[in-house]
Amino acid sequence: MRSDLVFGALSHVSNRYQLCQLASKATRKLHKPNTRLQDTTNEVLCRFHTANPGSGAPESAHGSQLIERRRAA
Image (cartoon, rainbow, N blue to C red; front, side, top):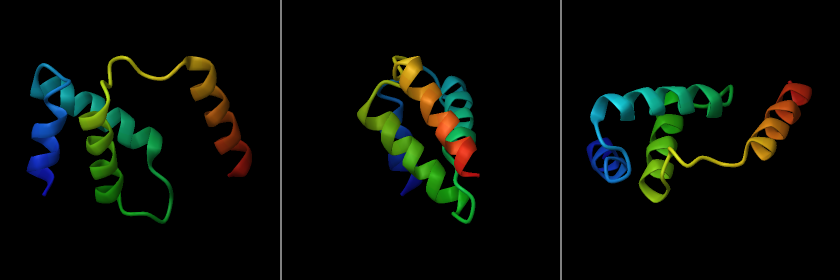
């Protein structure tokens, strides 16, 4: 259930407002066309449960991934 995902994600984020802001930004960036938005949101919350969203990935790897996605579209 999503409430379990939210409480799991709160282990790395200090407050719920910040969690909502980070989750909405990540959902917008990770969402793929022809998939359900709910599934993308659940995937983001699962990722937040396993890793700290504040630490993030290196910018070079993230930037190249965005470039590849733009070329494919």
